[in-house]
Length: 280
Image 1 (cartoon, rainbow, N blue to C red):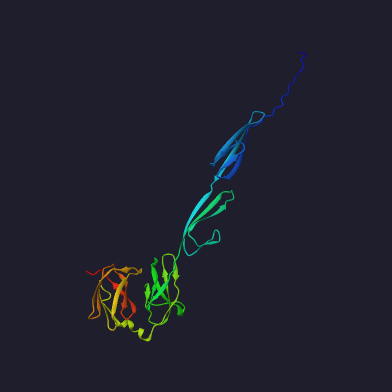
Image 2 (cartoon, rainbow, N blue to C red):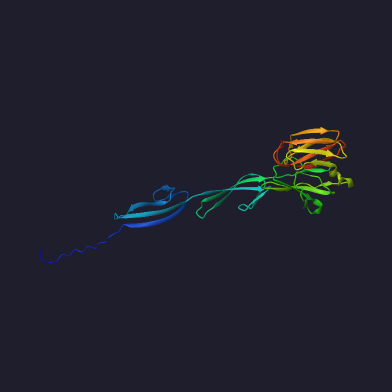
């Protein structure tokens, strides 16, 4: 009222709303302390607080959720399998696992489903002939000369073998996954045994199923026929004792069969029959 200035000074501070970004990565789930919630999916989440001045303080969570993983391996091996993951060798079929951890703490489980195949090939001696014991599921056969560093015996690829020379022999068999070799068995071929096979006549061979079997010097007591798996095959047979001959009619799929011949003198021999088709 006296004409003097009265100056009012405003000292003003403007507070601002703020945004804070938080980046996290976790395995399977993440519990955020700001909200008290647990998140199981990757995404962007936020929490808004207020300062004493009434400004928003927004905290943004950028979250990546990593997952535990399971990988299944299927393996098949012969006799044993060494798994590089564990460094262990397994000799039994089964399901095995190895658990690793990522840098985020997630389990990475590798499951091994393992099948162990086994072949236990065994042979026996019947007279002068070596043959496979039992009927394993084999794809191929090969006879070996044990005395010659297990060299293959050329042309001897059946489940039986009639050696023409003395020595020790073994059978190697294979299926889709395994190879196994039997024990070695000795065979002594007598001086007159080299031409023993010439005493047997089989004709026609190959044939469409009708064979004639005869012997020049030995009396045939009985005959049987086996397929490549050692299973006996049904045949029609007719004996002509006057000429020491047998007529054989083989009704079976085309292939190589084994004719097992027993003589009244106690001797025994086997020969191959090659069947081109089925006899009418």
